[in-house]
Image (cartoon, rainbow over all chains, first blue to last red; front, side, top):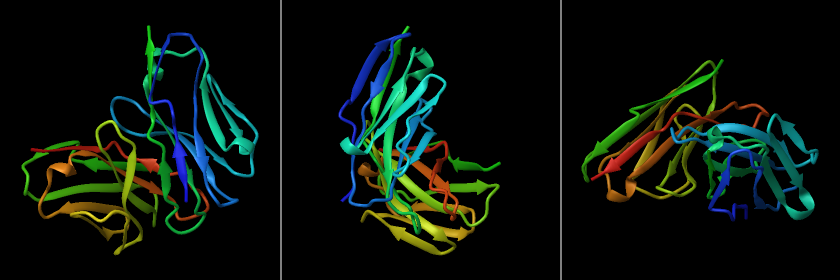
Length: 116
Length: 113
């Protein structure tokens, strides 16, 4: 069965600090996709990144970076030099299907508060 | 480009009243469509998904139902709302091709009193 765990319920950091959001997943499939979404106070989920199981290269996009490690079943998200606008709930998600419905299984989210 | 709309944005309904939430997608054809619910302070729970017109799959037994009368329209309904139906309802779409990313709408915040 698939499962996504985000053990950090809430994190507070002071502006300009770096912060890492943890995500651990469970799946029996060899082919799967991992995602991160941001949910600002407005509520809409904003897609951040998608990574497939065969691509373990870490990715950097501006102040955001992602560390995918299959050996530990983790897909962690780091924000460098955090800003107040980064305050949001961040969700990690897993998808196993490549065809059909391709349902997403979400973690319970991590609420990040960046203090000015 | 593709856009996804949901309405209403907010809704306050009494227990026992009916419900109809609408989701429409523009700029794509034959999308897979999804309804999720997010209870206060919790993660997202998949309620329904649809791979085509009239094709609905339910993930969670409940007093809600979904319909897809048109290719890019997805409707979430209830005949009689319960207090436990309160939450934030999100619609999402993805293409039916190899792309696996789901894109979400702005959501509807439902309060059942």
